[in-house]
Image 1 (cartoon, helix red, strand yellow):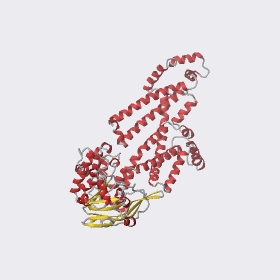
Image 2 (image 1 turned 180 degrees about the horizontal axis):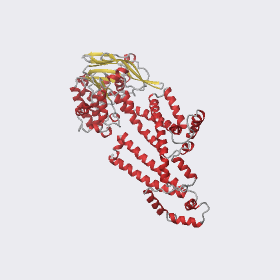
Image 3 (image 1 turned 30 degrees about the horizontal axis):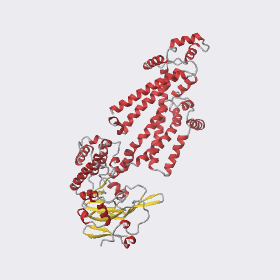
Image 4 (image 1 turned 90 degrees about the vertical axis):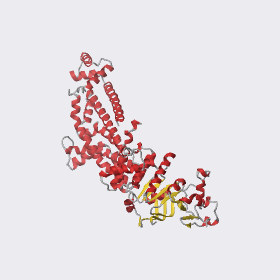
Length: 313
Length: 311
């Protein structure tokens, strides 16, 4: 277990360094001169050469890129992500103010999707090729292929405008959470159900299940313990990936429902060319991905003991 | 000895799209209380299908006809679910994929003891006893191990320990030495011999290895193309066998000159067999063999042969 964990963590550190470098280079991808943008943000729109040059020197934008990167990383290690060009707030505090909303939405969507998808996948696999399986699979395909923005509007028209039981948009109450969660969970549920069904069907072919029967393990235990733990291994990857996407903020759904999450922060940052905010958010999202990946690796090791020992050879 | 398991007129047919193949044909077999029986045949003779049918573990593509009785009760899926593990156990072939890869050996053995309703504080000791019984080295570390950490021979011993855990009346072992190297094979056979002699319960060995059959059993049944062609005491197999197929099989053993068996590919042949299933390869074949199916006839005490040529 030790060497395995160590190796996973070192891979994570390497990815973080790579991510920080790429994120840093983002400034140079933004159209326009960063110094000019900063100057405009500080002194108003009609800035002259003098102001731009001053900003350049103050912020060290005239120095070689490598020095700028090292300086940036030094700030980063002190958890200083810079300040928004628009609101002048620190980027970190902006992210922290938005992250709870995104986390809440991500968790509720993921939970909702799994509550639906896991039983659906299991039933579908156990009742393979019956009408129940066909119906569940149709639902799954529908869920996967329904665009979330389209489904969001259908939900709004139905629940908010026709039935008037849920608020159209906003944040703060449980009622606000319902529609965005539904909109996000639909695709994930469909995908997970399909994957779980295929995975269970694959595992059900394995000799060790027949052995378990032949030596006298009851059928319910064979399905829910012996088969399910094996079948969860590939499903886990997909679920973790979905969680990463949800945590990075789902730009479209958050915008539709006026959900004050990370996705909306990034989108606003892009529109206002607020590059420190965009940079900070991208970095934060990347860190989330890396952390979740390490978490998944640990879960893998718990699910599949063969992985735990691979490092020992 | 009274009969423990009785198979009457068992036919198992596999259907695949519009094709079908009979793996077991109108088979009658009685296993008596305490009997050690070996069922010997080539790959594809229907040995594994036969034991799977007894266990009620055939795939859905198999159609099963005939009756199987266990202590005078006719077996059905519901009764079998209760008997498996407790009264009848199958030690399957393919050791390498027979233990669940994601649970420790101890965890899997414990599940069996839970089925047997053994209280938690006694389980650990029973597991250790069972592992000692199958002569596993360092039995105290085995429960914590996962299947991939064990060798093939060790896995086979664990499977045997699992099979023994509830002292079933009948143990079926399907090719227990398959996939093991010669040294491990001898080790497993030696262990089986000890276990079989200790127990008064019945034991059925499925094998293609004639020497293993003679070593471990007191009765040998030879299976060809889904039928039993000869049954005789193990001690007489090498000297007194009568059926031409048995003779050919004995001659195919390495120490007898490794004479290649003339064979068709069994199992894919879908047309019903008229006459004797071995007629096409038999040196004693006569006109009657092609027209009329021979029956399993008693030729001596404990010796039955299915052949027209043997009077």
